[in-house]
Length: 204
Length: 230
Image 1 (cartoon, rainbow over the protein chains, first blue to last red):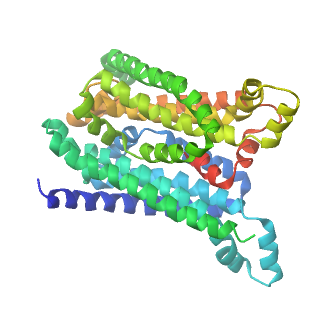
Image 2: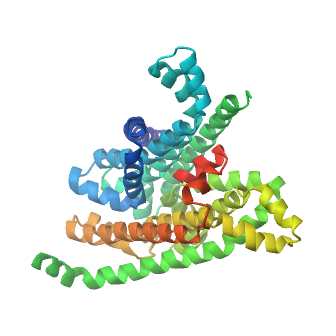
Image 3: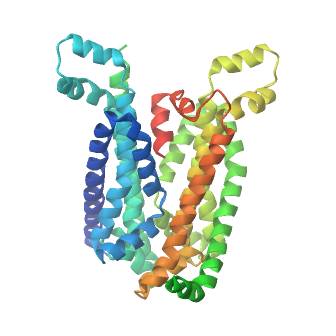
């Protein structure tokens, strides 16, 4: 077992996680902006995303396997579906949490609604949005490990082969990098968030 | 409709048996999780100097994927129902502990001062003021734990704990779509029902005058992000 045996599944794992999360997170972000103008829809939409979030990973993957067949596709779709709620919920909450005083100041300065959104609301809500993205990324590291059961690539392949042949070294060669990836993402993004939160709240 | 009848006569017993095992794994882990995590969460609020570090460590531990944790502990615990239960209990602790701590911290300190001013003891303040006010957040933690456990318990089938996961995995292994669905549909329904029931429970324990939304708005922004999505 050498390093390249682990490196290539690790990169595949990251590829799945990043692709899925970006697609789902992008949808969640756009939905949050859309639903802001329609507060009556917010509860319904977030409730629907919550239902998806509640579905156990292996069950969702099993349904998607029937729809998309074996391979990376059902894994990426599952990761995207799971990424919608954290980003949608946190973008919505983050934008709602912006103090209206700042919006009034922006308006008074003659800023257009687009400028207010990009230069005031988005930067102030960004730490909360980032928290949502962090949750989505960390969750998807875990879901991607069970993607192997529907034919997905990534570190789950090593774990699965290890389990089948009762080869503990092989299992760990998949499990340890997966655990480290999840922890590194959680810690790195949390630290970044904390710095940003301080930057956006401590000025007053 | 007869197709459904055929399906049930073929897989009904298997589904019920797997469901029973699944409920046993989930139920026992949630109950043990509650018994351990709520008192621990209360203790944490009394040692603020350590609490932040412990909560941070707990949050990091929670990010380790379920399949990974099961596998990492095989060399230590082996396989079977017992090791699976150990992992599930460990996992169930985290959301309950976090939410108990965050919930108690979110109680307005002026209310605690007022209670103390009225001559209430620490125990009375905890049981009459702090716990009822943080109950919605604590129940949210238990709900999250229970939903996660339904999902993690499916993975436990891989280390020989049985449950609905076994049907899914054998369905996948043998390319048997019906068997796959016989596991996946009850699993999904179970998770949704658990989420729904605890959602109702959460509303029931919310003190009047403190709507569920209001309870969240009272939280500090950094805590809010954690509670809402997790």
